[in-house]
Length: 476
Image: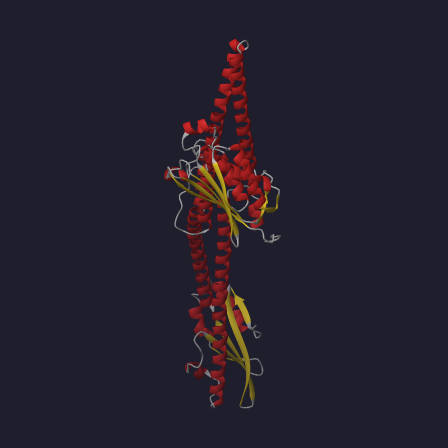
């Protein structure tokens, strides 16, 4: 049934209502049918019991020495509404109490013709155990008795016209109550289904109302912890993520445009200057070419970082992981840093031997980002300390500087894309605000945890925790 209902092009609420009504109708019909059948069975069983009791009473009456005559009919040995007809061995009717019952029966029989039919049935010598006259049922019981060396046939009949009327009235009552109950169930079912499906309608309406510039709408969540509650909660959570992602995308596009606008403007300005009068002035020509090359390098670096983050967002950034001896890599980075930052004191405090499962180029890029930030924001002559310490489960790499530090309000945001604590200072240092975002991504891809500790005016400490590889651990 449900497969046929599903194929109909109707809303699910109407389909559920149709199914609910059909099931309710079937249940009411079955209950009514069983109820009527059960009552009918009880009434007909009572009729058979009445015939059996009357027969036993008559046999006991005869066994006590009484004769079969009109006096027996006045002894109240027959159950009410039971007719007794007595025949001798010649099939001659000797005793019949039906005339006393017919007057009461006339009210049950529908017309005079029915009375005649009933009389003809009683006068018949062959009475069936169960017969019907004019839509009125009768039960009969036939027994033989011996009295004074004579054989007699006893015919007991039970008029159950009253029972038929009761069953007919019961049938009408059941039909009326079933119809009324069906109406109540339909209204109640529609109300329940409508309220149950309300969150779905709310989701539909809110989904229609949502626009790309208005993602703030949410579905009201009730206290009921049911499937639809979870659906609404999941939908709201999805909208939260969409809104956050869209806002991040807008900020990212705006910041990227802003970052690219400046070097393009510088390049354009110097190009115009060279075109006007710089061709004949070697000093101006050299200045212009140098500035164009510098801004082009900055744009190249920015574009590479943007492409890196774009691949990361699309899960297309490929990392070639293998067991890596981190000790040699840290030593190499420290040597490179001393070459590019001769005006700073670069110290390698400790360098434990450890093996991690990682992409060598990515780990090197991440550590360079941390060290380059320390160099940018540490005054000349300041100290940058690097140390690696291995525990039983992870490797801790610490990069500590004596720079300007980061205030508490900015520490939770420095890993956001294009976020800079001091825009003017970042312009001077050439920062784009993307390095720490890339470093955080690399750390996450290696199951690493970044810990930041910074005190304004005293310096910043970056501590990186990377899990060890236990497959091919080197022997110290």
